[in-house]
Image (cartoon, rainbow, N blue to C red; front, side, top):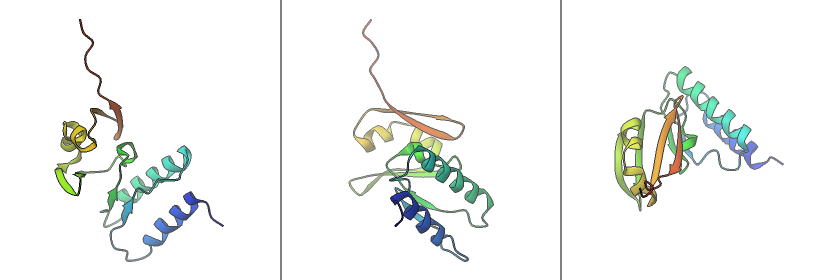
Amino acid sequence: MLSRGQRTRALIARSLTPSPRPPLLDDPATGLDVAGREQFIDRLEVLGLTRLEPASVLANRHLEELPPGTTHAMLLRDGRCLAAGRVGEILAGLQASACFDHPVRLTRADGRWSVRTRRPAPAG
């Protein structure tokens, strides 16, 4: 019997067989521990750099799991597109807070995003 993480890896490997269509991945790191998640993100990044057709679609609620090579993003809320375009423009603005209905601050380091709650400035 395979663990959830092993099943996820097997399904992704199967989708990458010769002449695949661009993979559609829906929360692919769910069930993985930290090491498994990071290895998976690293493999996605390598795949994007080495495939002739690096396009893939990643549906994810965890922005910190986006591979560094992610070029475009679309924010959806209640089935509607709030914003779409180059990832740096979409995730750097206030659209993410509207999407999650929570005040968030996104930062990017080494191509990876991190998400924190945007806290109001302290009263002076």
